[in-house]
Length: 129
Image (cartoon, rainbow, N blue to C red; front, side, top):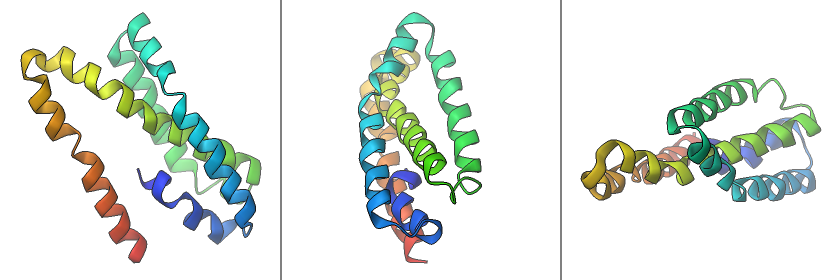
């Protein structure tokens, strides 16, 4: 969530090109829209396999974003992959919760989905500082 909310502010510190960062946001939003690929992986394999890939992507690309922040092409790729992986959480979370919690899934999903609010509030506070 932090990359989606702050990629432009972070990018302006290293890449002083607002037009390019707008393109990064546009391309990344397209990647966020192709999250259905993750559902295919869950149908074909398992949610544990798909979520393992997502978590590894989040860790690797999140930790190395600072290292590629001076390269325009790599910054575009990294932000796009991170937004794609973030979209995966939204497409897989209902399936994972239903498989794990069964009839209690609606209640658990309501609680689990509140992470979006917490992440957005935390991001806005962090951006201020």
